[in-house]
Length: 372
Image (cartoon, rainbow, N blue to C red; front, side, top):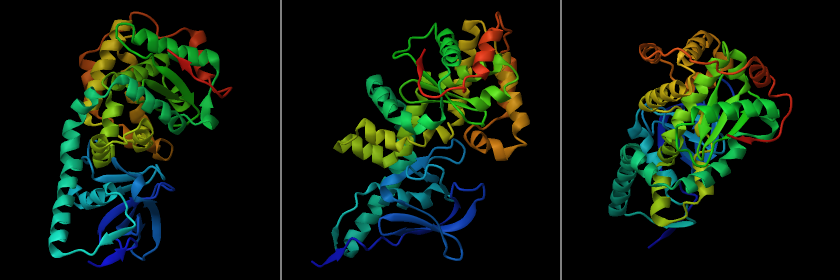
């Protein structure tokens, strides 16, 4: 049998829409395999972006459907959008296969088997894993998820943007404790604040809550911030972040679980960009419903969350500032209407004037985190 060098790459190419992450502009392009890299080139053949097969991730946006949009852990802001999951499947199968130094020259039967394998791998990535993600998540021990979360901290809470004003962090931790008073949570949430103009908060694996200064700046009042925190806690109580990571990892996660090597570090690499990606519509509804329960039990009522959603709607006219939030949080009128149908007035203030002032000033210093 003849041998050929690994520099030969499969003849994979497909039309895509490429967002290079450097500007807000997307471009029609062609995605192809070049050696061990995926490369996007525009119609003139100019390279727009390039990343290695080992860094390929899948965006589960909840609207376009799983495995239709690719990203990269090397360039977390890159998005490559296919017209359908079927076009993406061969690239996912290729990225999941370990790169070798040499390969046997292919015969027709081998090529046919490889094609079948690619289809099966594509089906697993696009259909099977999303369907199985919830039961798979339930089988993952929380201790393992905590280890994954520790690996994700540098990605999601970079030191240079971390706010550490102790009084402000204590307010966030206190709000989280009050909201979770009726829940069984272990370990307790670790809370952070980061200096970012986007009106956002998010959770990631291992019970970590991050509040961005833009949320506080644009909130109509403290009760609105509390409402968003309740919504994000709802996501984590249902372990949506871990589920999304499993879907994004696709066949890489499945093969790692079957054949070994699925360390917290490797799972964290799959999830390094996850906080920017959308949860599914069902996950958003589930988090909203949980937020209502948490807010009512704590006596904060639902008006704050509704007010924040309305504020988000007003901010949609400023996409240059808030593009990331609105790409990751599909704001639907039905969500506001659903909240109004179960409206419950507040039984007590969300926080004192001093606490609200401390929250607004929490980025005067940088460096540490606080546990709820």
